[in-house]
Structures are given as structure tokens and as C-alpha cells.
Length: 407
Image (cartoon, rainbow, N blue to C red; front, top):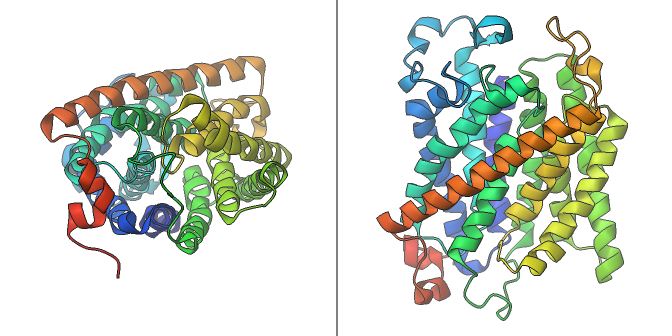
């Protein structure tokens, strides 16, 4: 679990920082990396102070309580395994709560960092800081509680999300879509050349994301066992299938398979298998990957142009769309014995009823995140303003927000 936790942290810094920075223009490379780096520090403090308690405190069906505020509860329980929740639904852990809290912190870090891809090149740095504090506490923590705490209503409902299809990817993707719409299109969008400055950086970032994802998915078994092994295997299979699906779809429609398409396909597959990783076997994982590769390609090209929004780096097109794909398909392909326990001896198997539970949970998170994010963006706009001035955007955020530039 220590290794998995470090791998998930690596997904944001340096993974996502490089992935996103490689896809923007030269004048915004540093500011894009700065966003991931700052969010890592910002969410760390928010999570320690209040986020962890709101997500994993006992609370009720909707939100945790303040029993873990400042992580002060760890003074008494730092050296022994702990139990998450209470009553019949309680989950006995084999690791100390320090490791669990840190592991979950890395998820809380990467989720708002993913959102930045949707509004790349145009949000004020001050707005980024204010918005992410509010979003982590008021959007991420409640959704994590719903899905992963035994008291959460989605957990109790029986909807499946092994490693973050709803909590991370749909959450971030929908928030990114709302942010892209509220902030509006980049200056020159559709006319100026907005080609990536350095795709080599993006390839390195995508490779770090791919490797780090084993911590993300296998680590969500919260122990080194057979289920973690299956989660690791199916993660690799889905990523490979999605990479090929996106690559060949692009090759067939545009004449050439691009580097950007290949790395985007890999991320699409990794996203889609995330909610299903501890619930499915390799053949279904391959199917999920193939579907995700095609869905992500559609989301990043046809859907975006059809609806007319400027999702700069396809946060919704990849994370939102493929998160939905994975969240729904786990209801079709779940293999019961993988999740069997004393409380549920048959585990969770794919069925029409399970699929409908997935639809319900997915729709609920989509709606809550969309409405909540819109409100928080409007509050942020009142406090500090959301978008840089047009002349600052043309000059680039590296200089106008941070006073620095690449050589």
C-alpha cells in the first residue's frame, strides 16, 4: 500500500503535470505544470485539515462528520489496523489508518488536477486556488463519502466503483465540462494554431500515468492479494485495448495514427477500467478498453465540435465520457467471485439490476457535480474573478501569472 500510494502521487507529479504541459502552447507550459504542483500542495493541506474527515468520518448517508478533523484521531490509532464504518457494513482494514488516509489523499489530489485540462490557458491562478479549496471540500469529499464509506448512500445502494469511476473521473470530467462552458473558449479558438508545444513531454507524462495507474487500481484492493493481482492485470489489458482502438479509429478516419491519439487512447482505457478493475476478468476488461478507446475518440473530436465547447485538453472527452463507459459496463461484466465476502458470499455479478444501479449512481454524481461546480465557479468569480484579461491570455499565463517563461 505504501508503494501504491507513491505510485498514485506520481500520477499527478510528475505524470499529469508533464502530460498536460506537453499539450499546451509554449507560453503556457510552466503555468500548466504549476497548476498540478500547486494543487498537490493545496489539497494535501485541505485533506489533512477537513477533507478526510468529511469523506471518511462516520457522519450520515450524505457527508462524513468532524471526528477526524485535523487527523487528530490518529494520535490514538496510528500503530494498529482500523475499521472503516460501524455496524454490519463496517470494513475491517489490515493497514493502519495513516496509510489509508494518505492513499486516499493522492486520489483527492489528482481529481481536481484533472479538471485543469478543461480550462487550460485561461483561468487566473488566484481563481484556481480559491476554486480548488472549495471544490475539494464541498464536491470531492461528499462524493467520496457517498461511494466509498460504508455509511454512504451509493455504497449502501450497492453501486460499484472499485477505484474511482464516479469519485475521480466522472467527477473531474463533469466539473471540467462545466468550467470550460462557464469560462468560455480560448482567445483564437478555431482560428489560431493551438498545436501542442512538446508532445514528447506528453508521452512521458502519459507513460508515468500508465505505470502509476497500477497503484491507483491494484492499490484499491487495500492489500497485496489475489484481487489486487486481477485488478493489475485487467488494468493493463484495458489500456492496451483502448490504445489500439483509438489509434486505428484515428488511422481510419484521418489517414494517420498520431502520437497524441495513442497516448489519449491509453488514458481512455485506464479511465474506463478504473471502476471495474476489482470486479471483472480479462476478456471483459479488453471489451471495456476497446469501447473506451472508441468512446474517447468520439468524445474528444465529434462530441466537442458538435456541442461547441472548448475543453482544451479533453478532460470531459476522455475522463468524463470514459468514466461513464466504465461505470456502466461494470454493471454488465462484473464477476461475482472477485468481490465475494462473508457478508456477500456470491459477490456482485453483472445483471440488469446491477446495470440500473450503475446508471442511477452515475447520473446522481453527474448532476451533483455539474450543479455544485457551476455554483462554486460563480462564487469564485465574485471573489477573485475567473479568467485572465484577453491581452494576458495572448501573452501567455507563464509571464502574466508567474513572471517566468521557458527559454
